[in-house]
Image 1: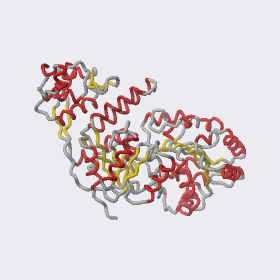
Image 2 (image 1 turned 90 degrees about the vertical axis):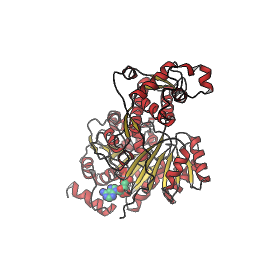
Image 3 (image 1 turned 180 degrees about the horizontal axis):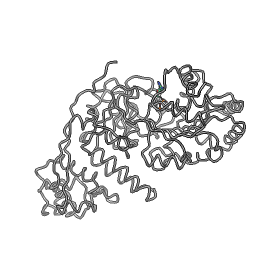
Length: 524
Ligand code: ADP
């Protein structure tokens, strides 16, 4: 029987699916024939089968490295139910269970073993692997969530860096690295750090056509959230916040408003986290308010929405977080409130971190792409897919497509804003600058004598909200920079010069209120 026929036969007999999806068959073939692979496939795309089937077809055990201890049990249970001999090794096992599993492994009684990275790299486990490899009893290594190897990514796990050892020690065992999120830079990092330069790369489409992307300007975030949730009553979803405190406060507030919400962040006791996660997975219509600590590998198909109250730090993070919505293919929403403060906070976080300057540079770049996405007048999906190197046409389903923003010549407004910053010594944040532009005689204006500036009151024709949007776009376009050392003080960058001098013009977008319609459901 040819490998392809055998693979399809297994797919049907064990997993009960009639055919492979996307590039699964090619990936299985590559591994079965002993080659290495790097697999980029969106969440829900079906990555697991790509290594499970080759592990069953090749001699010996498939070793799966996964950082998600909480999920190993579920995966192993699911495999056992269909008759696959699977087990896991992680810190949740007591010593007896550990030794028992190791014995089964050595006796060749396992098809698949899931191992946490730190356990895999222990002398004890490497010793076991040496014995197995010497007897040609290791079918393959699968490195799940491979983007964890990226120092610049959002899920960096230092132990992942050590996984190159697998290649160095056991060069003949095929390896597959899998991830649902990796821009070009991260892909390159995965290849070099894991020694996968020669691996065949499989990139599946990253399009999630059932997700509607919407970004709204933040004015009263809690009310905005509540009104968004109003269209999703009784549905499960995730609300992401940047800080633990905000998670706790938002969850408590939602409960007061009659929305059943649970908090999740790394500051909660492990048992609480576990309980909240289980409830989210098992009960209907729960809202999980969480930091990014929640979600990697959460296998809940009917998450109907993902809301962001704060800006993620990169498009990769955004894509991954929003990608937890609608894994069942049904219409779902990715919704975010976004404001000037997000830009200031993220820039500050980057500058104040202890990272080396090269890393800060990359983080700044990633943030720029995120901001450009928020402020663009182009289809959200086109920008997202473009970021992952995939061509796309306007989707007709995101906020920009549904209610195209009005694009206007903002050159004069930009000049006024920039000159307000310049004339006040580049020491003030947007709030004060807007007061000056609008001619508001506040105490602070008086204190600094800013009512005497030529820019005082020159922007009365634009309301406060309009000015906030102008400042946000100037920040997003890199004409202004938020000074991390002086909270939010706006400084001009070199790119501001041509605008200020009238040598180039600037198009700005004006957000139009999105219609408060419900996402229509397709009836299957
Ligand atoms: P990922 O790890 O990429 O997020 P999974 O491996 O968990 O995705 O698969 C997502 C879902 O799709 C699972 O329920 C899985 O059983 C299903 N699936 C995977 N491959 C196929 C296939 N060829 N046919 C039908 N369903 C599939």
